[in-house]
Image (cartoon, rainbow, N blue to C red; front, top):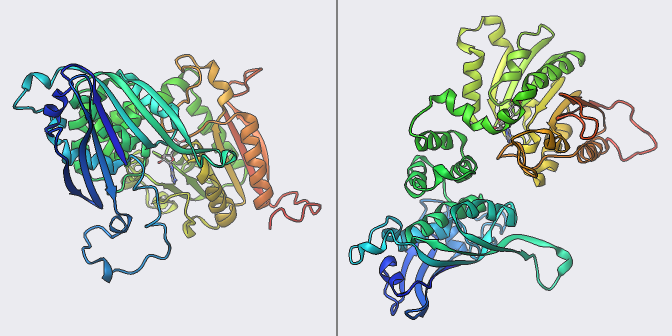
Length: 481
Ligand code: SAH
């Protein structure tokens, strides 16, 4: 993997001072899982390029963290740890190398030429292979607002086989007048955000790193929440970072509102959230209540409604985010709850992309505004976990209707309602997914709209109520097997 930094501001050789690397020498250091080199393919007063090349040893990379004696470790069950894209794509490993080799430049120090530190240069950053979830759009969205002109091209999966389509990699050239320290900081923060698969565990110190590298520009970036969340991966940490970026102007509750601000703000004029909760609660009761699981329960707004219903005998909230579960616990005031109610409800952490014995045997499962947070390629697994394995009698799913978005003031055309939404479906797209679930797992479904129905775009939220095993069609022996 490599990245090249070119300066065309005379004297372009100043780049060498700023990077603290002499153009006539190659500098190499060991980095976790490989070795990094800096060299200059060209160095003239008109144009100077420094290239950072990281050679990754996939075998070293696959060793468990902290284990030096890999031979004693158990052999992995498959080749995946060895055969992956990490050696070839710009990712968080490149950022580790940037930190190691350009740490002083990144920190904005240049003792020999302090005048250069804050001087914008005409720079060109070239990264031939960037792992970019969200493709060219994501790259433009992230780098564009920072003043770069972005040239990004999706790389084909295999140039020899056009029909195989695109890869998830992009070749990237950024051009702009930037200080070297900002340019490096942009790469340092945004490459892992694009890659979305950091190779090392994200911990508290990552918050500090993000604030240090992003402090100057992240607070003004329109996608700062998305960036912080992706960079930190864990919701509670990103909230901490965002709060500190905003200079502590909110308590925990305030932070949450900010996190959801986009979506709630957009939907507020039609109080969609309340209408959704009412519609889902009614559907749960119509299905007879009983044992109910709320999958992706978030902060427990639906649980709060359901726990008050005598027809709901047992209630479980599942979410992947501990932070959300913590909020739910406080919203429900679990501590102060009567013994009887307390026994009725459980909050558990779990991911909907892994089979989970705890959710088997429920009468009703609710999945409210969750599926659009899952990667489209994980939806099959999700369906297997919920409809195939847990297999509740009734499943209630809600998701935004993308067609309706044109009616929201304050939502730019083409934008989704929330930075974390991986997709928003049209009615036809939702119907197609519902149909495929029905076919595969032997459910039948009915569709409902939630919120004001628009004659052309339909309602803002779409809901499907699935029932297991009803109207099984013998003419289609594949269904339900
Ligand atoms: N149902 C709630 C929350 C919706 S927000 C409501 O309507 O208010 C989406 C929720 O799904 C978040 O709380 C998020 O943490 C959770 N989530 C996202 N991916 C998940 C996964 N793979 N497994 C479990 N929960 C997930």
